[in-house]
Image: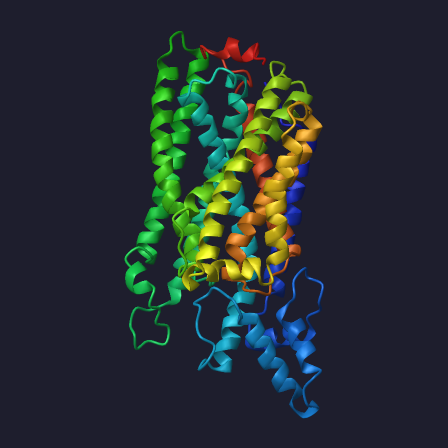
Length: 471
């Protein structure tokens, strides 16, 4: 039996405490009024990793007449802060200065919420996708992986607390109106209304708060339900004298993979693409899945290498690590295919409704992150993981995996931030706090779950093949 070491437990708790402090800092320092926003615009400094709105405004202000300095500074800051933002895509002409300020204030207040949302989704979805990977192994009756089943089950344990946290966040965002993360919640289909949004005339039947929340509950109940019964059967199989529970898991895994495909399809629309609700892409859900799937496999690899190094997985050999590395490499290529298919077709077609999504990411202030994300998620895995021998070296795989995880976190950051915080992006204490808090919670839940059952599963008819697996 595995024992959750006190050092790792302390590290996880420390991450959560430090992360909570960073998150709290984000909420404390977020502007609460328009006057606070103006104060931040006047005193903001360059060096955030992006060309901020107030920095551009200060530069423009030096060229203006001294008698109009404050007025011009404020106007420049407002126009820059809202340029390219995805919250409504409204025309700047005819919009009052007060409305511009309110829009900028909403984006500034969104920052700590976005930092939390990105981190909580990242760890939840990689946990769900780790469970998908586990079910694929069962449905395909793979002979190489049963010695890794307990690791996969442990990583999937985060699905329950992660789902609950996300549901609370979605309820707070919609019913509680705690933030302006989802702009469609504040629109109207009435052409005479000030907040009229033409897109909601056709999307309103799907994007309405009651139906949206009901779907969210359905998604997580399905994930939690299948996870509960499949892992329950896995535990029962340890003590069974027949293959009844093994066969049940085969059937449940096949069904779950089909059901998951549907739930993930709509989940990606609801929780991510709805942030930029004027934009649409038929490949988006598959793209999100590819990003989170390779992240899930990478985390499974990390936990496997750690437990093996501590002597808890004596039947795991270099060939198991090699095959996990192959999956990391293969699905990095799969992600690249979907990224290119989605991006290139829309960018080349140059249809405004489509290119508006990519413009701030490729041409605007998010360009360094966008280019860096491509390098980390495609170029780096190609160069590092293509060699077969390197994938058998644990420390080498860990280094590659850290870059891949960082790259796909960045990918999720780019999915969420332009439509929630606008062009004036930051990566500071709130963002680091979100990562540390949910990383600490993830570590605590996963490694605590690993203590609940022996790490070596019994009763699986393929376990012997897995123990002697080699190429």
